[in-house]
Length: 532
Image: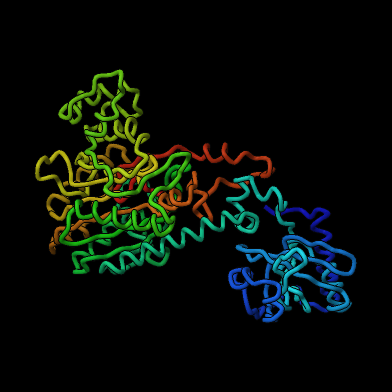
């Protein structure tokens, strides 16, 4: 959307032209500085007036103008580097007529550089006594009001650049996101894993059960699919002898949007040979609890008016145990055996009004009951195990009961955060599972997985017993930064096409109308899917 010039923009353009006429460059090529504003504050905030006078610290510092206070032939400029603010003191008789005229043509939002020495004002505020100003760039669009900031979420998501300028707390969210990812890398690197990269475009829509984005490669004249999940490529590497691998990857699923789902999202996925899913329960507790303590400084985190306790050990329930535990108090709960009987499950979902076709298989019916009854209660970290085989086409069957697989999902803050299982490494059984998925696809399930012959061939070379897991980075960041929506932890979230009168739109309404949350059975965080 191209903005029409209003009076403020016209005046700013006029000011820019006058600056050019004074002989200043409209947009400088570079600015050699001695410090950032944040560095100045960190280094000298505790220095007294007398110490600063003794040290006589010369600095050259850039920033964006936040406020201007003119007092006759002197003035104060408050400017910022996005993290900290600092004050510039300037006098007309010290900088000369040309620089004073430049000062008079500056607007809020402009980028400038100040050269001078540090001192404290009469009110004891750390400031730069400027002897030189340099014009770096003109803000032709006025910044958001300094008091109310940029509040409309619809505008904030579309114009993240303005959001970052106006809202310091937003910037802090993304700084913390970077720290979280850095700590994850350090953990896996220190535990003998190697970081790898797998294809973003694939000739098959594999890795999870979800609707893909489709494109066409002109030179090869083939259809390609944006990565749903990197799972099958990572397990090929296990076959090849890379026993511990991880990837922090971008995944794409052509599905609805919600406060928990974005079509493009970030996940951590890792695989460990000669292990099973129980080994990953211990690893996951250690990884996330350690991460929380480093990033938040405590194991108790507030999220949506609830406190989440990350102290170990975490709760662990089978899916059927969880359904029975949270069964409505006014109804008689079913037995564990009844919760795998398709006829009884069909009746139960009808009675409870669960949104799923009663003709679905037993695994999907149990999964739907779990989502309906249990997920809203899982605030503190909770592992859910013993998933029906029908929900897990890539998982190894339980030795005790082949109706279930060796798998867990981790729930925190009523969201699925991680999904892991002992990997199916029998090529014959894997082909059978793929064929079942293809039958579901033939009957209209466009999220069912497709047969990957090369992956079957890879398994035929023998894959060691392996455990694999996916953790939704976006959702983890939501929890550790206290953000309700996934859009608040993704710099540039996907949005509907931009509409006119954007300023008047209600962001919460537009957010909730983007689409319903999709419940998938896919691996390595189906719901993590935009796990965000």
